[in-house]
Picture (cartoon, helix red, strand yellow):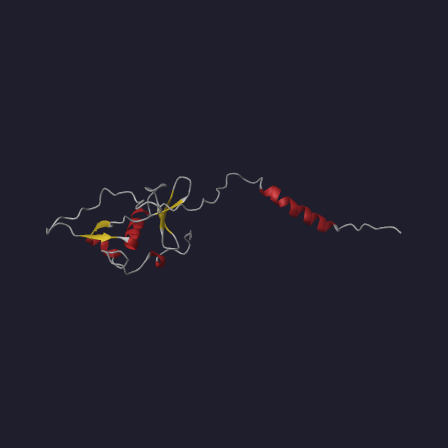
Amino acid sequence: MTKFHKKAPLPAVVFLSALLSVPFLSSCGDRSRVASPPPPVDDTVGRDVNYPAATNQPQAKKGLSTGQKVAILAGAAALYYIYQQRKNAQGAGPNGKYYLSKNGRVYYRDQQGRAHWVTPPQEGIRVPESEAQQYRDFQGYNGRSTGRDLTDIAPQEAPTY
């Protein structure tokens, strides 16, 4: 009795050979492509603030005066203010461009491309009342705990991190 060894059809052999060579060939690709950025870094743990202190913030006047009135922005209002101030900036790091994520958080990217969450100062940000009016609907405007947060204004194409 003779045993017959059945040969695989040629198209199946070519297909399987090509399938097995894909991982090898994909590792030899173009090295100039940029890899996806690393995962975000949560700088809020163990720190109160990672927003650089602004030198041009108006100071509140002591007592009654005819000076400029200020509003204090905290929470979502402060985050949105910070984002609006830095969204068109150039560069990376805390003094560079800020982004708004889908989940309503503000972040910036460091030189390596890692995202760093921005936390508003605990004491709030003093802003001229005329400029602060656009933030009056947000949580944290003049100590208010109710209002909008940033999730409803976050762009849909932003990363969710």
